[in-house]
Amino acid sequence: MSTLYVDHQGADLRAVNGAVVIAVPGERPRSIPLSLLQRVVLHGEATLTTSLLGRLAEAGIGVLTLSGRQSWRTACLLGRPHRDVRIRLAQYQLALDPVARASWAALWIRGKLRAQQHLLRHADPPPAAAIAIKKALETLELTGARLSQRPDLATLRGLEGAAAAAYFAAYSRLFPPALGFDNRNRRPPRDPVNAALSLAYTLLHFEAVRAAQAAGLDPLLGSLHDPAYGRESLACDLIEPLRPRVDGWIWRLFHDRTLRAEHFQFDKGACLLHKAGRRHFYEAWENAGRLWQLPLRGYARLLVRHLRQMPLPLPPMPSDWDEFALAPEPTPLPPEDA
Image (cartoon, rainbow, N blue to C red):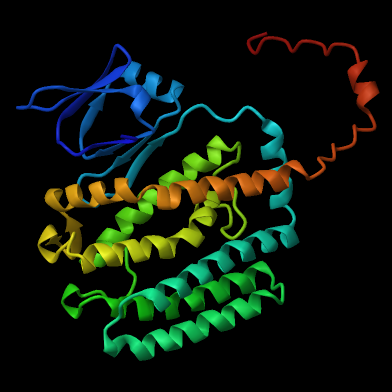
């Protein structure tokens, strides 16, 4: 076991003798050793003691809390940060170089395009989807060729957006029309497929944030995604090549009827995955976790390897430093009421 999923309203979690004890009203308490955990996912209202939070952080166990209805991320706790600050200094330097940023952005997009092509070529589409898939593959192929021309960041984002539109036009045709999935929508998702995709992307993003911090990187500072208040832009970069893998996994859940329309409910235009559906989803996610956890760590290590090879020029010392350092102590200001 590596992930503890808690999906009970009113659950109480405490640290007792190197284990986390979960108490749910009406049920016997359960105990799970902290040594078995890598992450904790809390869905809905739960109570955690401060001692447990400290133990989780000390052990490097991440905590993700999701809102009870929409499954939106409400909080994220990470373990101790990496100790080598030089990695982040090089990352900040790279972020100021538009050419270097464009090179890394193209790398993430190229990986995404290849994964999208793989999914569309190896899925089991209905005959009616053949034309849409052919058009999407042509667009993805053309976009990949454009990347070799080393476009700037603005052009890269435009290419990626056009490719994503073509891809989702074909991807949506893989699902039965009864599911009502014809495009990507979120906040709130309006059909079962988008509800499942949103939850999967949220969990994947959490893994990317953890992978970035564990490698010594700043999750907020990416290349393809510009810095934005409160957004882990590097995590957004890291998951781009893996989104099509998650898309394929979601398609398989519905294809194999692990998830079905009856696992979802609608409320004021939002499609919500109810508790029984979440149980199936989390079980499948835990089994498939290595499909994206290992690549995310590999992507983070690849970036760190590049950053360690970058020189770190120190800014010149101010010309008046000696004069400033040898200046006498300033005269204290008089009290305001003097």
